[in-house]
Image 1 (cartoon, protein in one colour):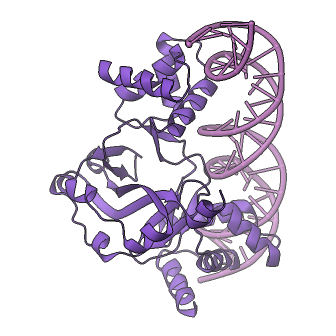
Image 2: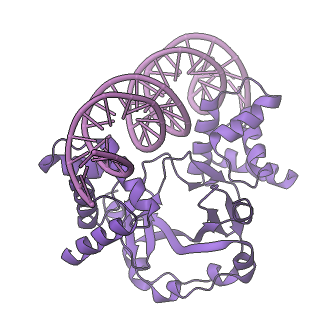
Length: 142
Length: 142
DNA sequence: ATGTTTGCAAATAGTTTGCATCCAG
DNA sequence: CTGGATGCAAACTATTTGCAAACAT
């Protein structure tokens, strides 16, 4: 944890970000939780001991953290829901710049085994490999 | 396409859903697009030839389709953003009932190769296996 | 000192809900 | 006929933006 915080300050400095009490608190709270919290959850926890941080700051800070690679956005992203009618087993590539999602097929991926400890604990309904990166048109246009 | 539409009607009937022009149009539009459209995109396309369908109907219909397994929600889900500070390579299990996301580690998954045709076309930045299903506590509580 | 960061308030975007009307079965 | 489906409007939730004040460097 100490280790993590030192690294945190280094990474901020590398990216020219100031170390503010809010940023430190938000990052610490994120490390403490293993539940992949949302901005609102983080905000509620911080308010208890630091009552005047605003939700906007939490939102902005988390997005800044994501931009410098300190954290990752894992679920939802506030963007609208998107729907996939393709019933064949398939996998996704998603462009982080334009949001495009491309289906692809791969037998090796389809054949992946579910780890035994997960199969015992959870009822697994679907399995999918998600790749992220920059798509061809975004690469060419900038 | 004809085939798909017949199957569509069968699946609706199996689940006791009425076949309405709106539902048919929404499903057809979804099949036509390979871009994993959002409710708003579908609504805009349908409006051109069927001006009085409401966005709410599109939203409700798509969610109904997802509930009966006809389509899948692939990105965002309108839920708040969630953040992951874990820098180690890892994978996710997500409970479709309570939304909990659990990290897990797996060397076989980490070692997966990116298919050559994708590596050529796109710049791949991250790779992750996403499992979905019902978690232990949700399984026990209902 | 100064330019970034913050907090507040207002605006925006997506989704959901209540309810009266409509229509598929 | 009748209950499920739809359209409209309003409510709600999450996020973003503009701006002045505060603060880290």
